Length: 146
Image 1 (cartoon, one colour):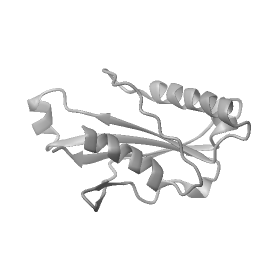
Image 2 (cartoon, rainbow, N blue to C red; image 1 turned 90 degrees about the vertical axis):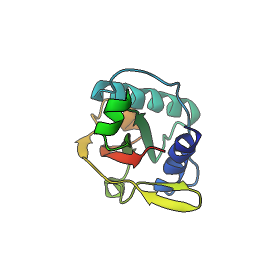
Image 3 (cartoon, rainbow, N blue to C red; image 1 turned 90 degrees about the horizontal axis):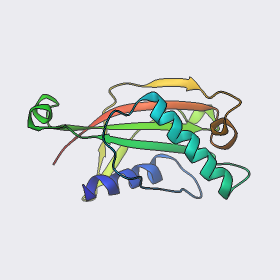
């Protein structure tokens, strides 16, 4: 668990170039992570960003891990954990992310993309004003569980 938490922070810091990045660990939740849940997380992030900087942020990412619920699901998933990355940027050419990876024991492990969805951020939202114009749910990526 500690490795994946560190990996999530590394992913945030290393995927986007930037002068300053803010990483926040949210509490563990149970249940489905729907597009509405991700949308609300982005809105919450936008509001926190507004409190820190009236100019907003150049980019942001939300990362979520989906752990198998039991041994049968773990086996069915091929002993993988799903990693969901939703990235938003002020500059469209930064998305989709070119590569998503974690660092472990001095090695870079590229995560395999399963799916990718692009959508424009509605102009009348805090996400648009503070974080970016484009949201790219770049990957639902597997990472072998250890």
